[in-house]
Image (cartoon, rainbow, N blue to C red):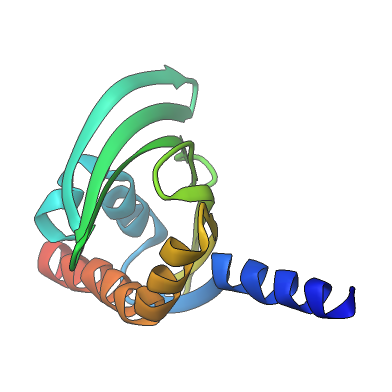
Length: 162
């Protein structure tokens, strides 16, 4: 019984990943929020994002709700998934919840905070893969892809705002 529990915990660990990151940049919270919330530009600079199509968009005051389909490809993996995105310009926050694709759960959250001489970016990502094979592959690639992903946003900010 104990071995089965340990085996199940190990399998769950292979399926799950969570990461929090804080970065300070020389650009304002407004500029960084504008860059990250411009999801339709992602195929031009975000690694592994092959295409993105907004399928629904509505505004309610300072909040914009978007449903989008993103095609992501890395190596031999190529997946489509639907994202439900909440953009809150007043609070400089972006919440993303994915409803399908290779994940049972994939959430990420951005917050941009003005500080002296720039802004602080808080980023969190949380996922659970649908199966152990996908989980193992994603865990192997996660750190490398995640680093490239963050670097892509920093490079884009330098290009747009320097």
